[in-house]
Length: 175
Image 1 (tube, rainbow, N blue to C red):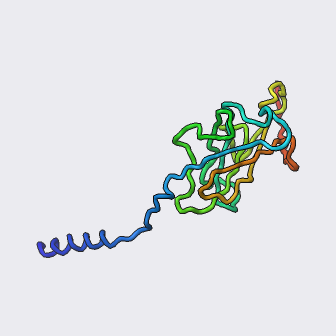
Image 2 (image 1 turned 120 degrees about the vertical axis):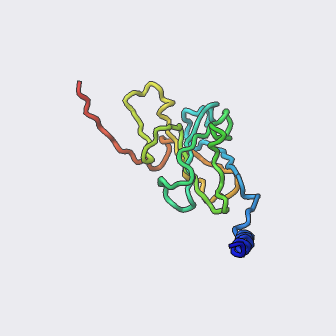
Image 3 (image 1 turned 180 degrees about the vertical axis):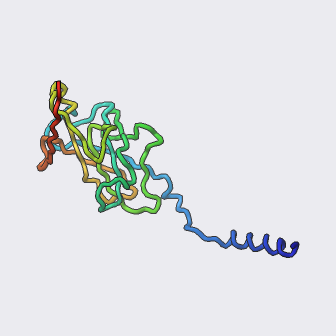
């Protein structure tokens, strides 16, 4: 029994020391994205084509060349600005980081941010148009193939895009 335990300890030590894994590249660890966003096209709610303090966007990160799905690396993360073109995560712990392996990713974002996005659908209620700023929907999917750079995303206003697909939903209200 003692002979077996004497052999067992060196064998375990040998196995543990002989394990190999990928070496960690510290330059790739915790590379949080830096996001800049500008508004293109006609003037919108954002006065003079600029953002106002507190404006928030929703941000998605997907593997480069893939379509948006529930397996995206980041889903509807809220980023806010102080009024410049720079956006930061609204909650520091929610900051998006580039993939550890250095692979390319694409970003999709929209304005204004909404927490209640379901199945990647942004519902717009046009029945009350008193607050025009609330109807100023913008979208960007032109930040492609990034792996470590500062993102620059150009937004297109819903009133100046070449194509806008709308789905009309009706509800039957009983009074």
